[in-house]
Length: 343
Length: 293
Image 1 (spheres, rainbow over the protein chains, first blue to last red):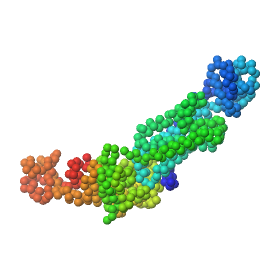
Image 2 (image 1 turned 135 degrees about the vertical axis):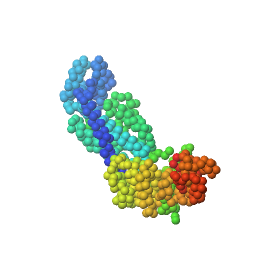
Image 3 (image 1 turned 90 degrees about the vertical axis):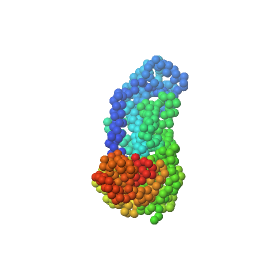
Image 4 (image 1 turned 120 degrees about the vertical axis):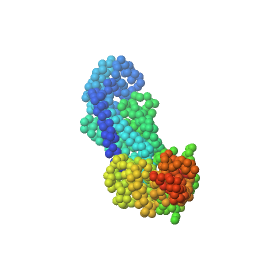
């Protein structure tokens, strides 16, 4: 690897991006517009359904509780085995009430109007009145939908930038013989691909930081975890998505084909990777498919850091998945890469 | 004189097309070597194999008797037929980018002067005219001060003035004892620039030599043209002269005798035009179709 050649290509590609005003503007304003749109659409309390968390109890008890509340609409029950996690969810307004049937106690968030309402509903039930539950309190700043959706929107923007910014550009270079001209120089494929990868990584992280910081001034985003951890998972996710873009663009010379392939790659991630809604209640098969998509791990990891204060160890599953996928995509992309697809 | 490049039994077979069919030739050091032929003759495929851009189905290319290795790109310069330049970079930034790829580079000010880039050095690549773009591509081909330079149809699409300026640049480069390998389908270009030529058609070499040798070998005649209305039909028939659209073509081995014959038969010499055979005529003779078709 000749660093002089690598740096020259890195610099040239970065200059090309920042001088392309239309592309730069789109990368900057698209996520901002989405965030503003969603904060406007989901202003107020966000979700309409009430959620009661249940500490994992014997099946029989849970069924009785559900049976007692079954006539009420718009209440979801979520099981938790970890009390601290469940209390954190209550503190963050993710659930409105937490009930432990075995220990005959429940928690309410005093800062949440929904929590107060759900408590009244809960106490109004005959079963709870008979049992005599102990009331416990929790408090904490609530998570708005815009806080929840932030990692999804930033992740989705990163995904489009990584896939199209690398995949489309390489195919365009190949089609108009820029790659052929570079092949005629001592520049190696590894140097070229590395420079493209790192240039895009720099661009994506730079743009995402600008968007996050700028929007944070207006939205005052919720943040429980470490910004360093957030940057690390963001960079790893972007690296993985760029590698996927390189793989998709490894041979094609047709802009129409690469457009189709990139859409085929990006749409499932946009729908299934938890960008817009949580996959917690989704069928297992769908969750398994989502697990194969890099954006799922980027969004889930970032969301865990932001909303749960997770550390890198806590999200090691997502980190390992991204590392594994990156290695696979890069190895395949390098193997298949062609400067100029011969006839 | 030693061969700078030797091409031996080169063949390139695509699925159902043989683009290059058992082609062999040698390029002498310091010569300008022309590969001539119409579109689809196999010129570009041949030189792209020589450049190491695509691989041959069979045959080999030797540089000064040696097999091509990975270092060859440090020693040759290439100007492709169709190459886009990276958008949003200026001419100077493009020169810097390519200069960073090589161990040895020509002094940039010398290169700018040689290729006459001074007037548009800070212009975006997208805003260059055809001639400016070709001069920049030539500069990129020369940036590593190569001894062997490949130019693939370098003046296609240029206006006559830009073409002649470009020829002068190539002559300047040639005067530095560089070996130039040029493909073209412009005959005047080949006659102006090339010391040796190979004519290809349908993947095969159909003739090779110096332009002068080839024309001398195939043509003893010069062509005399006269407006058709000035010549009696009977004389045309008797002499077997060729009738073209609005003129007649007389092939003559002795212009003086032919002119004397015409004057003897009271034929007006107004609009008379005498032309020697050129490479286009040679190609027409060899293949039955024009080189620029």
